[in-house]
Image (cartoon, rainbow, N blue to C red):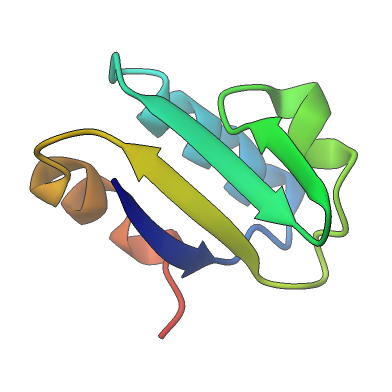
Length: 76
């Protein structure tokens, strides 16, 4: 399990992000304040404050490939 901060500040970024992570069987959670939603849910993502960075928790044993595929969304 690994947690990274991501930025999804546009509709196109949200659609691209969901398309990428939907290819994986692992579970993904987005955490914003007290809200935890399924990161594969476009409607759930749009319920969050997308002007802020969001914590993404990846529930996978080998997350290296996943992190490489979502590198454009990760903020340092």
